[in-house]
Image (cartoon, helix red, strand yellow):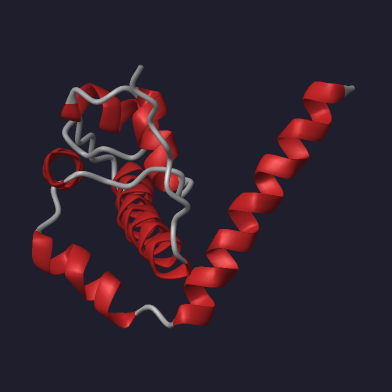
Length: 127
């Protein structure tokens, strides 16, 4: 009988997951701002991914997968990173800029906000 054990993630691994999540969140936020700016100018850019649904359609990834990435719950594979960046119309350099410039406290604040969101959703489900 084969028994698989799930190893506990280290603090560094968790921090990296949330760092990636925050970077993707920032890139998506940039796209949302650009879409809003375009809308004010009367420009309709159908290729600009500004939501999880848009990312899903453009990348071929499930919405749940993208949600897990943005929530810091997923250890992101290289192929997923590539698909998300392509769907966002962003480069690895833009992604790396965020990764390189986040402070640990900024990432931990993002982690806390996501944990709080999950706790609030769990409370609503229990009611």
